[in-house]
Length: 230
Length: 230
DNA sequence: TTTCTGAAAATGTGATCACAAAACAAGTAT
DNA sequence: ATACTTGTTTTGTGATCACATTTTCAGAAA
Image 1 (cartoon, rainbow over the protein chains, first blue to last red):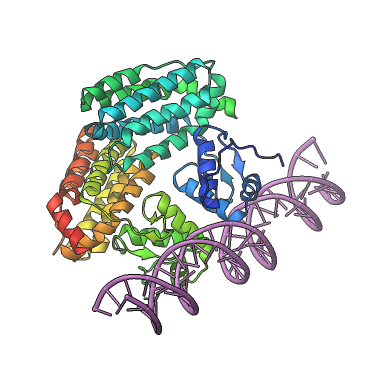
Image 2: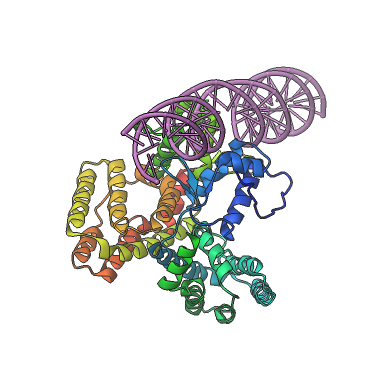
């Protein structure tokens, strides 16, 4: 049995073992550290996280209920495989959910918050130019999150993150096989629409950003990526 | 400590204790058996379900990750309270998600499946006329589920059910304080649109159904219901 | 009556263990 | 070579227990 390698993740104090395991596994899946079809074991992860089966099993159960993992009938735990149809379904869900969340966040965004969003966008471009794909990916998620969570009563964020998690494994493959990331400048468009407090334009820009970003992979490209993943 | 009463739920054979606990608690929350603000304990539920803390805790963790329960900082487990703003947010999410899911299901529905959906709609009306509110509620959920899950690659259903779960507690209150349910006949409209395979009309009918059904409660009505809930 | 204090009870957490089912490996038969 | 069988190992499951934190509540003090 090969030793499991997880992306590092500092453990905050006062956090329970379960919460730590959940956060770390979730982060790993979100940035594509696991390949589709990979199977994980409770004891294996418990060892990798230097804890025991109980809290790990709880974390895995939570991850399955948000679609990040699948419990098979055999009781095996696997990273879900992605078909081209499922991929298209996930992208269309992202567009619908995130356009909606963005539209409803506009009225709550202060100028100061928009400044912070601009800073995050600059961090994305810096990471891309530096070739740091994982960092760019995380910063990009942060860009979207900052917009949507401006709405204090917002409910959609956990659902959106569920979709992100389900796209995570294919993201990992894409990152390995794409020579370099390119800047999709719909972010600038979204930011300007935010400054104008133009809800429709914000929603449209976010939708286009998704469509032209990860959503821009066509069926062929996805099929190719998936075949590479075995 | 008062004994916990859960709606009955036959236990299928071969199911794990954890799965049974999860399904039963989820069902209870979905049909409004728990009031907002109610707190539950692991040991209490374990006793009610005649099992031990381990599988119950796993079930509770899963329910929290789909928004059906909240782990407070005190580590107390409670049924989330609902504010009018949160309620409105949930309804708008239902509309967006379910219109989308319905639209994308249309192309996959066979005439036979539509017949079954019609039968479910008739069961709803029968339950309403018989005054069986809980049964009407479950049949109504089944009506929606049958439509959305016709799409074999569909991803949205778990997200939609998460929203349903978050609306569950207020549903329970509403059911107690509403003299009788009335038939919102957008279902007929939806069914006819399904027969015509008219995607836009289906999406519109589903959206209107939600808006005029539970979504029809205005802020005042919600505030009143919530005040009744303490 | 109200507020404070401290002991007792309740509760979440996580490690451990026994058990059953599944997966695996190796050897045998066809 | 392939298919089958059997014994071993791995793995998920769930009950139990010890521990730390929180809650509860009775009794004392103001």
